[in-house]
Length: 297
Image (tube, rainbow, N blue to C red; front, side, top):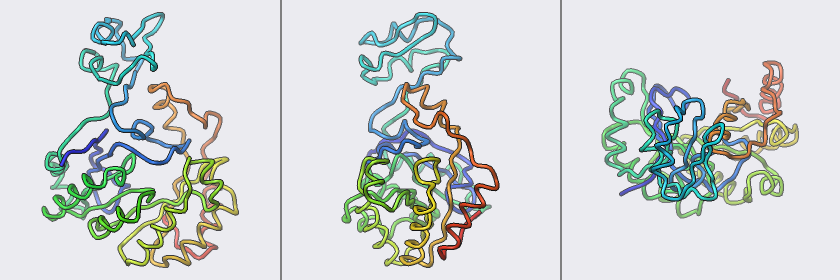
């Protein structure tokens, strides 16, 4: 069973209990403006240009079969010509160009993640699959989780839950922990700000809640997108009514993704957004708590 990943994060402490190894899978059905992993949105490699590391040798341009690398005062990639083959990244001696995205078997992925086993044992950690969204590659995700569990590892799955009900059913009992997020309760706002209806997400959320599987609900709080009082109050009430066992974890906006968008020549819609102050974060937590949900700080 082969799938696509774009990164592995070792010594992860925010992707489930204990110290974890997190694999980031390619592909996501949503198109959120605030996404911190834009390189994971679509299948195949994404070519990343780190301009400050470029030594101007021109090796990348010579390796490119489509003439997509150009040099003026600084290197640039013609995204229209780029076929994302990754030859430029292999040719670059300075690491200024990277191809984010690789094929790997489930066995090889679990073997790679298993290198952190000593930390799992010491901390009660394990393996987490994130993305992108792992439900975009359901068969690969299922096989990876099975192999990880066969080795005795705790498994967690981070997902937006946008998938066919059959996908959820096939995966339902495989993660030891489901980490899911609810962004917006209003369907039209969800379509406008993520590109998709939230109806499949809520249907899957309710099925997951009814199953009794361990889960954590994350709420991205993004300036101008998800941070209205009505939205957060509605999400809190929904979680409380649907699954009293799930705590809520607010995920507050931070600007760290901006440099990523620049390196991929992608538009970043939050250029003028500011991180929340501690007082603002407390204010939003209180809205969710008042709706009847335990909030993780």
